Amino acid sequence: VQLVESGGGLVQAGGSLRLSCAASGRSFSAYAMGWFRQAPGKEREFVAAISWSGDETYYADSVTGRFTISRGDARNTVHLQMNSLKPEDTAVYYCAAGRPWSDSYYQSDASYDCWGQGTQVAVSS
Image 1 (cartoon, rainbow, N blue to C red):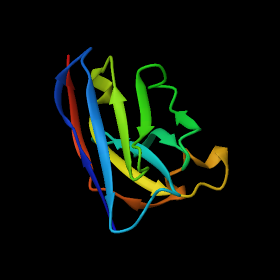
Image 2: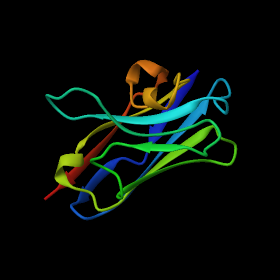
Image 3: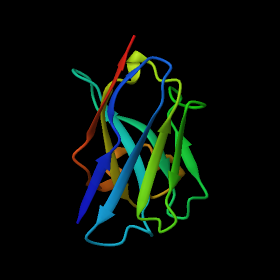
């Protein structure tokens, strides 16, 4: 069982990146998928999540209107389109899969039991 992120890199402020997460080993089509990030010296924080069906999406206030989460057709992949990037978006971004108990649990990392290794995103000013 593995989640593998890709698409990170270095970009100037105002630029865009598209992160992808591919699941292997078992199907995650019935799982919610989320993105979290951790900046140096800070705790891991919620970024965005999407329900198993793709019908519901959730965003942190800090990224609303700039980031878009989506699932691939097979629902075993998830993407995070990041636009209008800011230096404060610099962090390691982690993909996660889980089954949040209700809407309010999508933002909790405790709701996710499978995590990727992370991909670095760096935004220069």
